[in-house]
Length: 97
Image: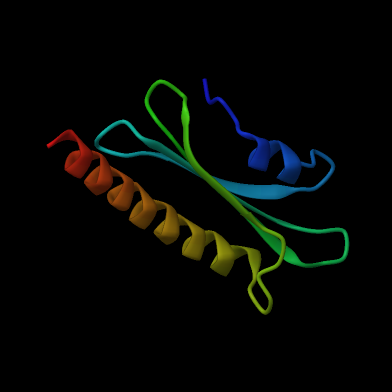
C-alpha cells in the first residue's frame, strides 16, 4: 500500500475527475501519474514514485500545464516519472558503493 506524502494530500481533490497511469518497473518501484482539470479548467498533474514497500520516494505536483491537454500532460508525466526512477536508482547505486 502506498504511503502518500504531504504533497499528494495537498494536491488530492476527490471532487475532480482525473486520469491515471500506474506502472510497476523492473525493480518493483511503482509510478503513479495523475492528471486532471481544475475547476478553472487548468490541466494539473501529480507524479509519485514509490518503493516496493510503499514508501514514498518522490512526489511532485503541478498546478498548471498551460496549453497541454490531459492526454499530453499524462504522457509527459509518465516520461518524467520513468526518468526520475532511473535517476533515483542510479543515485542509490552510487551511495551503496
